Image 1 (cartoon, rainbow, N blue to C red):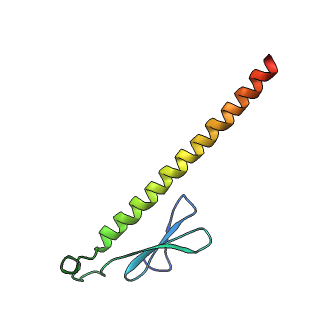
Image 2: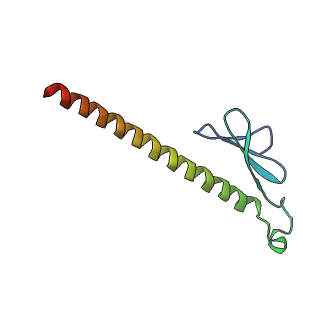
Image 3: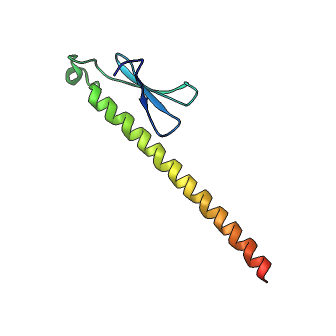
Length: 94
């Protein structure tokens, strides 16, 4: 993957790979996070830094957590809307 070929996600975020990090950007291109890694062949074990695959796994975990939060928030909004509708319907029946 290169800087000109970012990951595209179902969310408003995208992940762009740089030479030594992944950048999570919002829909308008603002950088939300930088996840650094040691470039291929670098001494990531000796330095305690992440390898590219470890950094990518971290990015995926971060995005999955955000997706879960969004899904929960949307479900709660749908439940609240249904409760309001039921309340309105109940008032009309009485």
